[in-house]
Length: 142
Ligand SMILES: [Cu+2]
Image (tube, rainbow, N blue to C red; front, side):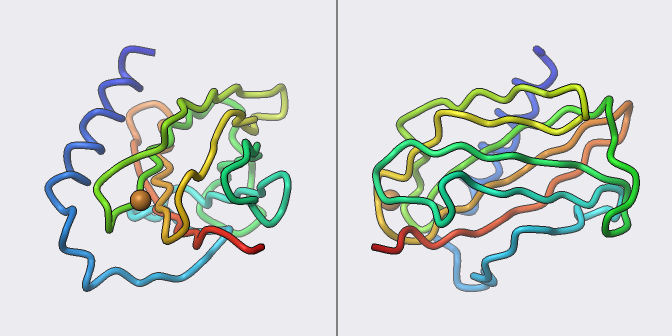
């Protein structure tokens, strides 16, 4: 657990260094992405869907091997860093990540308190292989 916290801290530091320079960001909403090293194929789905404004929502995350609908790892760990890159802040809540018996992750307690673009950096750790993918979400319909 301490390792995950450290990784989250490091990622947050990188985000902070980049904040204010989002001109090159590809603001595209995806629900499935391959991590930057090609090792993991990460998917998520929110509940409710679409994510509501200023209300708690849950997510289910899955980490597969590098191929779409490949093997879902049962022994991976997931850390999320959820921020608004254009504003340099995160959420006011701390989500809880719980791995289920299938190897997926129930994430509860997220809340988007501002409209605009949010970035969810998902970092998957399995053994020595730590890779991330960043999912963008525009908050919110309605
Ligand atoms: Cu904001």
